[in-house]
Image (tube, rainbow, N blue to C red; front, side, top):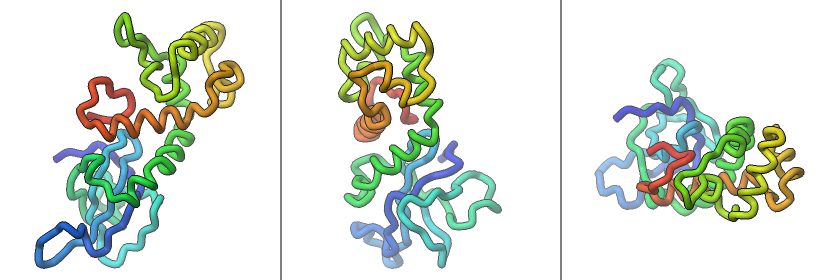
Length: 185
């Protein structure tokens, strides 16, 4: 299996492995989310490696840089997350969205209609038709420069980061979602 992700963020650490694992020798497992494509992953840590929830760890192909990870075990779906990982997910995602603000502001500046009845902006939770038109009109005047600029110019948008995080979680929950904007298929 080929993974493009170079870095991932730890959502949960299971030092005794999964409780439903019936094998004789259980392997410790890290549950993580990829930094770029938001792939949910199970990772096998190296012996004696120390982790905390929220840690950014290298999982790329350069084995010399993998100081804490032995291997990527598999890609998992949202339903495979532990409850602790599900609880941590929105906080990690909001951190990632804030770190890559220009990428997501670019989405607000360039989002296009999907078809004659649906615009990609409308797929963001909490963003309706009127707000969509306000965003389109404002970006015609001048592209948005930041989340702050967006919220100041479009009064009905209060927390664009949470809208994006909400959409990412929807795409993770429904792996075969027809319109994927942020999560890798």
